[in-house]
Length: 411
View (spheres, one colour):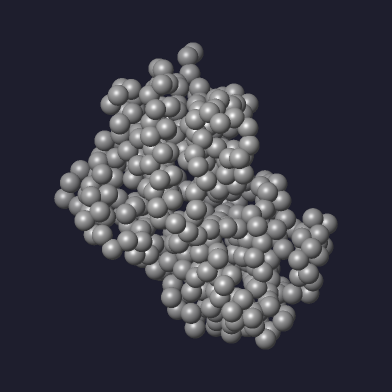
């Protein structure tokens, strides 16, 4: 039987470190036996100065055909640089898509904002294909939450375009139940697009709870001189939508407590601002560590006693911090800075795996850190174990993949 051909138009893919890229790599690998898969994605950031200078570079991963787009490096602190990068990605991705023959399904995600889905809307009509639109983040709602620009007419125009993306797609996939409510609210009084909620995941067979004495975990702890420390870790995108530029100021309250150390693993638009604050305040117990290789994340996650899972105020129903799945898989306690009723807050409450504080309640964050620090090691380990048990029951990778497979086969 001839397999359906799916073209995934996604901004990051193997071997990119970005969480969405890792997620979609796993999805494509698990679906390659059922579908003929082509992926259109940007060149990984770390390879942009290497190899061919061609705009389109063909590659493969097992049975997956990959078309990589060569883009200039983006300065994550510059809006102009970001906009240029987004415009070039949109143009090159659309050209690459239109070159593909006999496409049954076009699968796009909401990155870059609005235009990611718009590629699918255009491609659907020009290629006479089905379009599946996976919304990882609602925009312009996300940009509005952080006042990215003071141009309401641009936000309104962007929302109209994205509503068109949703309305003309054959199916919208959302990654949180609160996001499904946002979709419904966008279409109040009108026909709501066909949609499903399929949660993101981690590879729970790869990321498992490990003792700090495990040699790779111990090596990480030794490398950064974290022995006998109470480690609070944030691991992921240090970007615009998490209020990290203000949360970092909480660390000043603990600067004289050398038993506590704050670790920020990753990179992003507000990292330099955070580093400047730490240097200005001469806070010695805050460390910034580069992104870890995918193969090592399972060890770095296990080095922490508590993980920060945070979102900016106004992000409820807009996105879900996918890092929560890796933290739950590692069996670690969570300090959530999340709005009530958001997907991640509901998961923490349902699983009893941590403490949640409202965004911008910085005194509440301080109190929560003191509370978790005062807990016995057994109490913290029990919180983490609760998260792992819940994940094994309700959030397994294979369950989400099965939902994708069923949906795509039925289209």
